[in-house]
Image (tube, rainbow, N blue to C red):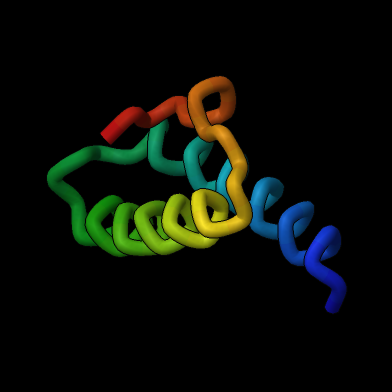
Length: 60
């Protein structure tokens, strides 16, 4: 997978995950698991130099 493909896939997953998080109860186990992946994706995207200001809906 090229770097551009990795960035594209990560952004798509980040966006999809946030949509799921926004409709989930924050005190649920599912939310906690999604939040772990959310943090991982933020680290990945930041390492590629992606500015998350516009696409981060959760802001945690």
